[in-house]
Image (cartoon, rainbow, N blue to C red; front, side, top):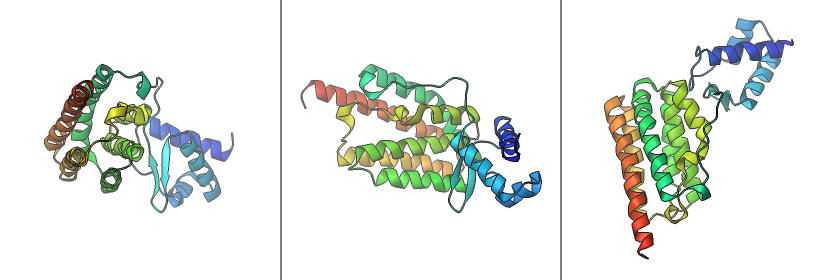
Length: 229
């Protein structure tokens, strides 16, 4: 086994054992060189392999951060074309069950770096009112970063495995009016604010309100569509 393969194996074990949890930063290159007695070339190659395996994310100028631990089974939400309105409602109900607790834990455990990333996703979502595709991706990044900030690898793993499909919505909901989009942004801001304040009960309530309102908006739009509005 090469030095690179050995380092990859050892770092992977630390991630899977929860020694370094999702959202946390790996030691610096210099620290890894000193700890494992390898060259910077070996460290960089090992980090590159971990990134390719989906275990870490390298952020320019900031270092490498652990992503969710891979699971043995992948959760696959249905694709947009496969969903009925009832199916989307079920998906929102499923998300409500775990995302409320994920938000509460994020309020207790998030780091300053994670809070900055969450704020960046919120800003991207706010700016994407006229771009449905960008809005869905930014919305997913917002919820994913909450799961990562929860410090619970199962929440993080579920959000990572779900992908943007967890935000899947029917076609007639892709272009909300400005007022409706503003309310959705406000709900995201409330979640972010509670997490920033370290208020787990507030974060839990804000997430529940957001997903409950998402369900109501979906059903209201379905009624409007069936009535020809």
